[in-house]
Image (cartoon, rainbow, N blue to C red; front, side, top):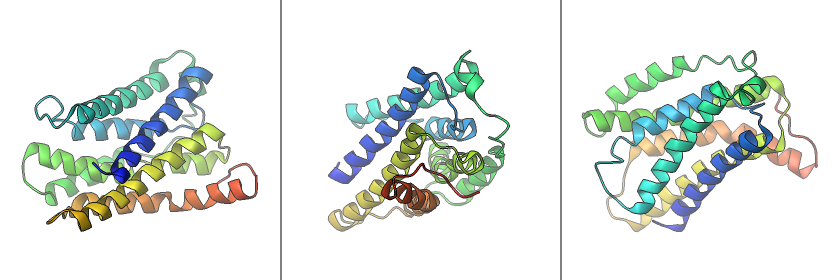
Length: 215
């Protein structure tokens, strides 16, 4: 554990809390892509297959349970909650997210660290996480109406991944033989997908204007 890894974990946690705050208190999921949330739920399910078999630390188990539970809760709220689901704009959230799953699975079967079920699923979760934000970004471009909590949620997600890249750089120079190409490349792709959003977010903040993404 180092400061970049811890900051990345906390930023990721804050992003989830911001989204849950929006959904639970305002009883609205306007501007949130259910497609992205379903992909994240699948990411955590396939990544944390070792949660009850391999003990690393209590911190590790708690964080895994939080991300698993929160992602499934968000999907439940958006699909089943009698008030929240009314605010979901399914007519705009039309990205065919299922088409992201099969290529990521095929890539995991081809490129992995070890050909076992758990290792392939771990690689799959990394590839899928790299592109899971796409339905959310497309939705924000279509609606062009981004409230503060939604903007902060996406910003924190991007910041979490950026901090993890700093964590990998730190570990590369501080730990001998630390090389993990799969998470590095997947993480870099994921961060690049946020670059456009970062630019417009900070432009809106600098000019004190409402955040809008170009169509």
